[in-house]
Amino acid sequence: MPVDPYAVAFQQDPHPVYAALRASAPVAQVADHGFWMVTTMALVREVLRDPETYSNAVHTGRRTAPPPEVADEVAAIRAEGLPYLPALGLNDPPAHTRYRKLVARAFTARSLRWMEPQVVAAAGELAAALPQHGTVDAVASLARPLPIWTISRILGLPDSWRDDVARWSDAATASLGASAMPPERWLQVARDDLDYQQRIVEELGRRREQPADDLLSSLVAPHPEEGALTDVELVWLVRELVVAGNETTTTLVTDLVLRLSERPDEWARLRDDPSRVAAVVEEGLRLASPAQGMFRGSPARPRSPGSTCPRARSSSWPSARRTATRRSSRTRTSSGPDGRTSASTWPSDRASTPAWATSWPGRRPRLCCFVLRGIAHLPVAVHGRASSPPALT
Ligand code: HEM
Image (cartoon, rainbow, N blue to C red; front, side):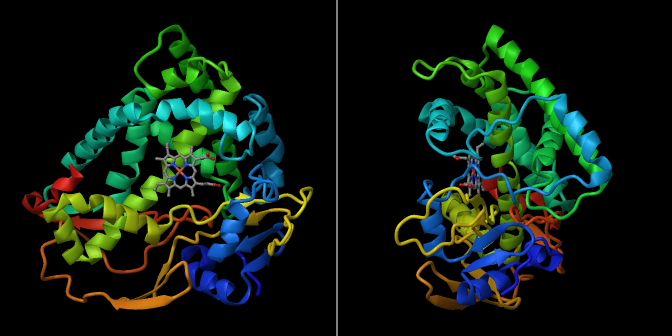
């Protein structure tokens, strides 16, 4: 069955295609892009658990290339920066293991306890800035700034850099599994990425001279066994941390606001019992799947004995966690990892229960990307703060 993940229709609603692929072509070749898509839980597991066969160090297929009219200019801007060095996201053991070890010391239980108040503070500031009543874009006013503010503070970057951090993150993901970008956007992305590299290298130098209580300082400190990371390694590693926690969290928060605004009963339960937050987030992750797919594979590597996957030049795995597909505005059908399906009906009355935010009806355009799948804008009506959920602050 032909599949085109770059098509707008697919990017706006890939789930019917995933369902058809799972049923009839769980390993499907994407014509003209040199990769295959695997769509069943069993195959995705097989790919992800076998880094010997399905390498993570795959660069083809992930990104689109600049158009010929700006290709030289983009290359010239890139040449002013540091050479690209894969850290965690595009690497295999043993290099991947080394980076994990070096990064893990910055994510100990103690540092996570230090980070949590940063997240809470950022969420509190954003919630406090919302109007008492009125319409806001939940993406612009909450879901997008939350991870940007948080990661900026965790890294130890000044609050005045938040817009720059957002710009750098956008630049890093702009060509990832995306539709064609205009030539001027390519140039801007290259300049933004160069700006990121130069400013972070300066920050790294400052932390080496004067360590602070932040993530950059932890990362520049030499590891007792592995030694110190170089500027080139750190620049790309930090960019991964900025990007990995950013788009994903924005997508998840937006999707949760949308789903909860459509389920006032669930919203009220959460407001009355904030201990439900962890379960709601977990379920939100299962349904939203901010990271729809990633790439693995290499033709040079041997195929594992018994493997049912092709030796693809590159393969992408659309999220096997996303297990529910909305069939109509009221009925949803879920299929579990075991392939069994179950259906449940959503309540239709959403006007009778007070909600903190109500989303506008209508289609919500998704980002033009098949790897990261977010909602670009989500206008919501904010109701009286007296009924606002305490869990948000
Ligand atoms: C809703 C939130 C998130 C989702 C859905 C998500 C999803 C994912 C997925 C699917 C991968 C695996 C990619 C692959 O194997 O190719 C991954 C890796 C990674 N994520 Fe997240 N992520 C989220 C939040 C975060 C946050 C907050 C951070 C921290 C800043 C983070 C840092 C990373 C890193 C460093 C990796 C690479 C790990 C490795 O290769 O060892 N992520 N994430």
